[in-house]
Each structure stands twice: as C-alpha cells, then as structure tokens.
Length: 109
Image (cartoon, rainbow, N blue to C red; front, side, top):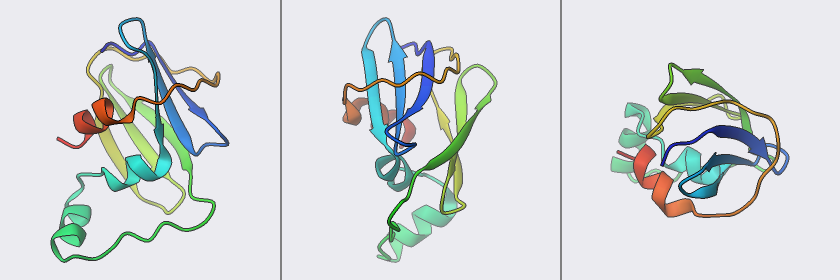
C-alpha cells in the first residue's frame, strides 16, 4: 500500500488513507488509539486496565514524520507515531470506505 492522501473525516472521528493500490482505508479514532504501541499503552494492557474512551473522542490532528510515518494526536492528549508503508501526501478532503484490519496490523507492529 502506498498512500497518496491522508485526511480526517467524520468530524475527526476517522482517519482516511487513500492509495492507488488499495483505494481508501478508513480507520476510526478509537481503533487507532487502542492500537497504540506506546510503552504506557503496552503496560496498561499487560496490567489488564481497560482504556476508557470518553464521549466526543477524536483525532485532534496529525503530523507527517518524514515520508513514511504520521504522529497521531488524540483528544485525550495521547500522541503516537504510526508507520505507513509508502510515501504520504497530506490532504483535507473527506473519504469513506472501511478496510480497517489491514492497516491496523501495520501500525500495531
């Protein structure tokens, strides 16, 4: 997958990645937050502590990190870096076509 567009959609409750190979992949903010591999999140999971998602939770923003990663900023103050297999181009249009599992696996490793 080589994303050419990254955009927030659904009132910032989803992140859409569009590529010529795979079409559009839409990932919900909650799915992305739960997939975080930050040390604090791994510890929480190991300790069996459930992640509480507040009403109105959303992706507050994202920043490109070079050509192959994004820093995702969440409304609960958490931020995490996610690798993307292929060069990225940030855009602001909306898209929707869920295909969650494939990319979630990529950011969870």
